Image 1 (cartoon, rainbow over the protein chains, first blue to last red):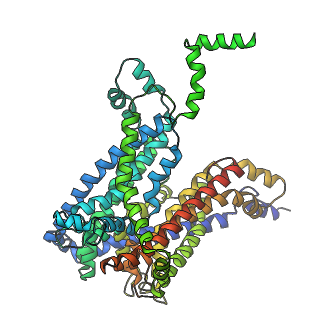
Image 2 (image 1 turned 90 degrees about the vertical axis):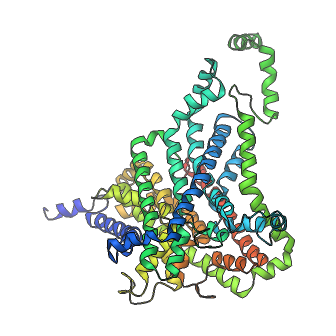
Image 3 (image 1 turned 60 degrees about the vertical axis):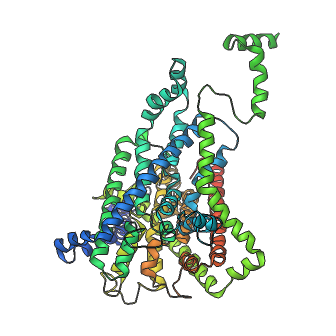
Length: 288
Length: 302
């Protein structure tokens, strides 16, 4: 019966029917468009609502300028510290065998499972006016909470695992033979690290630094707890966005937000580029 | 005889026979396996120092504070009606959002791994947007869209922003990548021959999907669900702008922590934080158990 033939083809046993394929694809695209693309579009649309001039005008606000400078300062301190930590942690964990290694890896990943608000709160309990070290700090006139050191500490906390978790699986995979070869040829420890280990992990390192930096500049919950929201003094860009938004200054809020959205997009683009070009040289276990 | 030959063979490989023979026994009891590579003491010491300074001592402060309150006071603070309501909002909506993400995340992961369509690569990259977009930015963007005068809010038949539904929307956004990114690699590694075998045995496609493909994806789905749930419970930035923050209705637990801290009521804040920490560690444990279980069952992780 020739009439049966197309029906048989439609009902392929190893693939979904074209109708099902179409439906699944449309649902997937609609879901992503609805929840991901639309908010991204909204940021730029709202920022440019009153035209390009109003957009740029909002960057003349001294508080916004101070917020951008503070964000850069915090990232410039927090990111390098976490890079040094990430390199040290991956060296110790990937190049040596010792007891309690998997426990140490779990501890390094710990900040990812703590709410950002709780991360900030830890430091308030330690350094806040009523905290454990509060009275001592007041006596010595040292301010950590509601000041830049608190912002830096909270940012380091939430970006802590990014570099380490990219490097550890990759360096474990690479093993120690190349380092042993370099050492046996007479290179010292530092020399081996700089000319053998570091070049081997450079793309994974860049990948981790990129994610660490994006989070450091965009962190909101943890820094919100320790900032005190002093205008022009302790507000990073995300906190400045909140203040402008709560002042009903929507164009300025979305303009400041568009800077962060732009940073996010650049991060995403480089990240995708790295995955596409150097996928084999970035840790196979990365999914974050 | 045989002992002598193996010892000779070992001696040929390693000249210090006696030393290398007694070394393994010492090795297994010692803390670290000997290695020619330098720098263990320096890096290992620094890692613990930095870990204690930044993470462990501050987290211990929370535990210590909770301990100094005593169990009775801690329980009283944690079961205050407003605190209970906030915890219910946070956990209930996080669960619902993670469940929705499990369903749609599976569909998205399926479309991205199995089908090809224009713009697929771009959409694949966009899945990570919630990781890359700062939460405050997502928060004001979502509230602009879903507010009564917003793009979607103006055409929706009911109020979304400034109600619990708004919180739900924000939590779906924030949890979206977790399910997709845990299911995707499993789906890509899936042996197509299993599906073909199922087909040759007479199963129709829906039966194969339901009884052959879905069971292998369950561990990844559960892991993704747990990750999305854990993230949503602690989420603050993307939620507070769209939530409306009405006590007992749309007030989330992290917001209540911040409010208690601003009142210098560290005890109440600690009580809420303790519950959240306990739950997130339980989730961490659950995720590890799921992964161990899936490794045992399927012979691979995730």
